[in-house]
Length: 138
Image (spheres, rainbow, N blue to C red):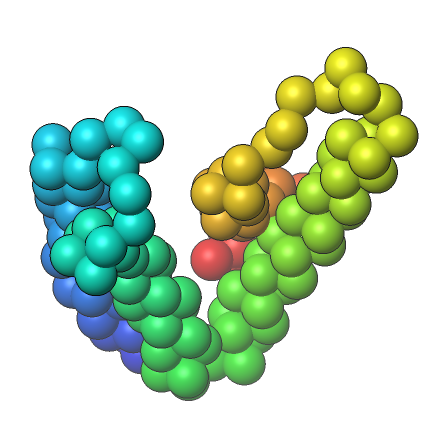
């Protein structure tokens, strides 16, 4: 369990600065880029910054899996990722088909796919708790 705590502490040390960077880069883009601005190298560079923080989050999650020494805890984390991925693929596929065949459906911006995946992580955590019990769930 000590290795899990160490791996989790490292994960938090990576995740928190990336979260701050994400918030700051979204605030910067919102403040600097006017609505309907034409694409230019500077605007594209600023607009890409939040996406780089998301890439950092994914890297931090991957490092957590690598650094977890306990196979059972790693399995719980992988299961959360699989549930999140399956939930995201199912919901975005259904929504996309509805958008395609139902003109009344609002368009879902691609931006929302990652937050939906993060909600899927919560679904995966609940699944782990229900399946394996709260005392043993990561």
